[in-house]
Length: 327
Image (tube, helix red, strand yellow):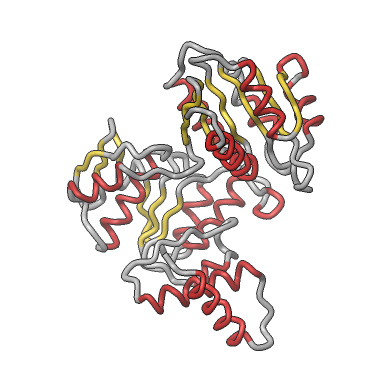
C-alpha cells in the first residue's frame, strides 16, 4: 500500500512530465499509479479497465492477459444502445495473439467477431473452460474446486483462476485456492447483524447485478420481513431493476440523493415502484432511524442501487453502532 507522500510524489512526477498535454484527473491518476508500480518493481499488475474499455485510460497498456466478465446494458449513452455495441467497446481491451478470457455465458456474436478481428486468443466459458458444480476445468486441463469467495459470482472467480493459469504468474495450488476463498469485496453482498436484524449492502446498480443480488436473497431467505433501501442514478434501467425484484421485498424505502445531480429523485422512484409498496422516503439517516423502529429479530434490510448510497450507509451505520448500537 502506497503512503500519501509516495502518491503525492507520483502526481508531481506526472504533472512535470505532461508538459502542454491536457490530462483529466483520472488520466493523471492512472499514470501516477503506473509510475508507482514501476518504482515498486511489482511483479504482477492487476488493473480494472473502466467505462466500456476501449477508450479508458487504463487501456494504454498492452495487457498480457485480458478478462471480460459480462456484457450488460449499462452506460448506454456512452457505449451504445445494445449488447452488440457494448461488446465492441469491451473487446477493445484484448490484444493480438494474447489470451482474452470471456466469462459471459451468452456472448453476443459481435463480441466474438470483434475479438477475432483483433486477433485475440479467445478463451470462452462453456467452450474452452468450464464451471460445473463448483468445479473449474481449465484450458490447461486442470480440475480445481471453485472457492466460495463471499459476494463474487462463480464465473468471475473462475475467470480469475483461468487468468492465473494462462498468465503463468502462479498456480492453482491448495494454498492459492484457500486465499481466494477468503476474498471479500466490501459492498458486494456485505452483511452485518445489528440487534438481530441482518443488513445486506450491495452496490448492484444495473439489471444484471440486481438479478445476481435477487438470486442470493432467494437462496438465503429467512423467516422475517425483507425490506429494500434503494437509490439509483437516473441513467440506469430503473424499471427493469425494480421488475427484477418482484416478490422479493415486503417494503421499499427510497433514499433521496439531492447532492448528486445524476440521481433519480425519490418522488420519481416512488412513482415507479408504487406508493402502496413504500415504507419511508428521504435522506438515509431518516430512513435508517425509521427502519430501526419497526424491524424485528429475523428481519433483513437490503441496501442497494448505488455506490453512493452504500458508501453513505456504511459510514452512518458504522458511526451509529460505534456510538452504542449493538452489532
